[in-house]
Image (cartoon, rainbow, N blue to C red; front, side, top):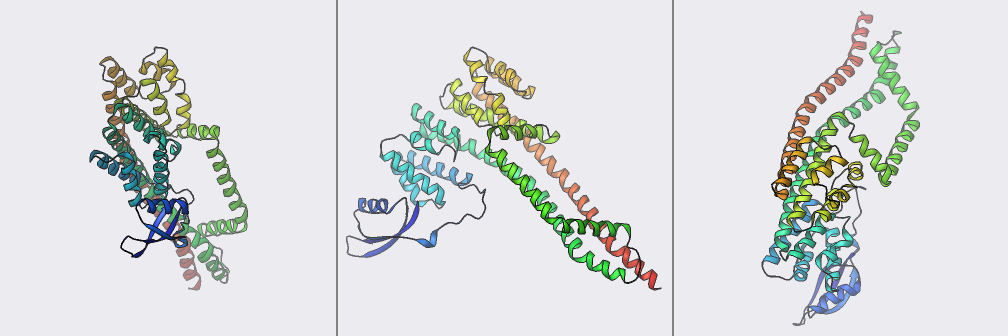
Length: 402
């Protein structure tokens, strides 16, 4: 997909230029010829080549996709056909990656595919939950309401992710600033200060010596340190691209004392909310379970839950199958069991998700309230150590000169 500049002749005899995002020159011509315009020329717009700045940046933001679905629902409710709605939105979308995807979806729908079939090749960009929601909406004949339920689901997930990122941003910035400050001190200030102090034929204080020795060690072994960090990064990339490596890393996450409860409860929340959404859309429990399991952001838990649909298919209850496969919090089992016995599984699953989402928010707020003073204390100790390493030698120099 690329940007093109098209020179067009209107019925009034005017020549206009318009920018258009399309997979090929032929697609540009077809688009404007269908509107009754005469295409004079089509050229590539080289000024709009996008160069990625962040290698791991997500191409399609959650907010952009949520906004697309909100506009799509509004157009469908207003009586526009699905194809026309996609076409109208794709012309206004600013995110080039989402625009590219929508144009491909539009092409597939023109070829006779349904909306869910057109989105199916792009499952990795979004999720299986979205594709399943589209299928449920098409089967039930109530696509707008099904997508609205997905929008509510996506908003909750996006909000939880943003809270976790916000909780980690402040400590990360403070820690980075502390490392930068230490680097400047031990590499530029203390070495010069040591030469000046040596002219007085006095030994440096212990704290100053320690920082200078650390500086000399870091500078003399900088290549080995960078090489070690590079190896760690490559090992992480290797593990992240291998399924067994992902399972290993995610299993280690569940052994972190405070993080275990957050990751486990977020898995419960996502699983229950996804299952509730799919059941509400009319998808069977067995089919919904396979999709809901994949919505869990922990590969180790996904592997643990892999046999659960088979247990349910063999006649076991959902709560019983969960108990045989994974160690979820007892509250989740009890609430799901109540939902099954009261024939209100969909509503109870939604309640379970809300309960655990509130618990996660409380734990994140607690984490932030504890980490901020802790980081400030650590920063204070670092600054105090650096000040002592500079001022104690100065006081000694004053004593010697007297």
